[in-house]
Image 1 (cartoon, rainbow, N blue to C red):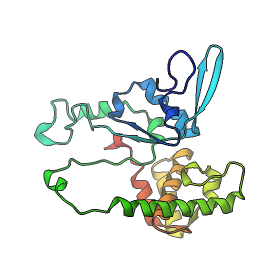
Image 2: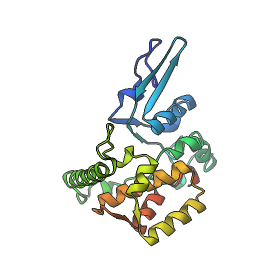
Image 3: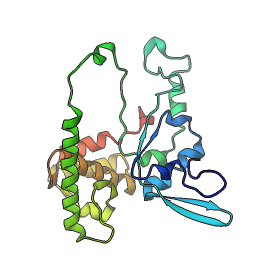
Length: 233
């Protein structure tokens, strides 16, 4: 059902999420085959379904949002609440996610437990304010790629869809930003895929910051912080 529904070739959950969001809760609880099936569509925006007499390609350009506990019981790092297998249980649980899959996830954020006091707070940015900033960033991206692609048949309008070559054309790094990026690539041993994904995130952070030109070291540093693998915690 994930790649295709039933014996007949039909779109599965991945293709049905095309131009939308695919949310997977308790990510490590999915089978290894299901998780690895995400790799191709996350990379190409398409999914190939092969049957004995038929091969069909479906569009599958979606935003993946996944959630997971640090371990099976969910209490890793919570002191007395931890199970008797901690911390080994956390490593075993998180190891269910392969390196190649994690390499395709651009932003990884650890969310601490929410206290009752936190739930009662009314401070924070309103959704309407955030939505306005996102809309402005998307307009910056649309205008940028329109000038770079000369109205191609298949125009790119957002950073997420830009190829490596197009990203490099849109990337104006200041000196500090370039030095930090080079050091991160060497220290973290970034693959070519990770390198361009990091640039894509930094370019988006700069756009959200209202900077339509240069990417500075702060944008690069924030993008680097999101590439930390959960298995390294």
